Image 1: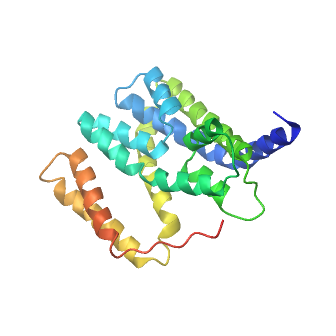
Image 2: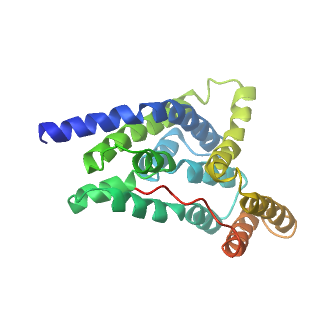
Length: 233
């Protein structure tokens, strides 16, 4: 690696530091939820190492705790992660030309936070090494949080471990909030999805109700919801 590439990578690491501060506690919360759902410490850590999708991991842990069907868990996480297709496309469009192996590694590191950090603002590097620096910083912090939560599960008081379950809802809200202000149609869609999920939950398993309500309302929302245009990158 040349000196210039090392500097770009180091700049990415520095840019990812603020995100690290948020990833560690959420990683701890995920690990606690995973352990409560019946996963071992090793299984919880393996999911973070290989899946690396915070909201999906927390939803999967919640569905496991409710004894959701395997197929339902897979479909639900697939639907939730569909947004990564669009985010990865935007990241690769902005990124300067790079060898395919590096671009594939970068694609694995696309999260809501790394996407926002890399594609917004002006004067930021378009280098794959800058993005990989961001990726390494937040990937390590997510897995550090998972490890701490998995190992500390038996040491935390029950009232604290029970309260960490609310982090699942907090993460979903954090994904939605940037687009909600000034967009009444999107807010209405969120409420419609919640209502649909509640009603369907009365006639089918909660895991399948989540999937069906998400798909139905996402299809309906595609006809009337307009999201804010992204800044030119």
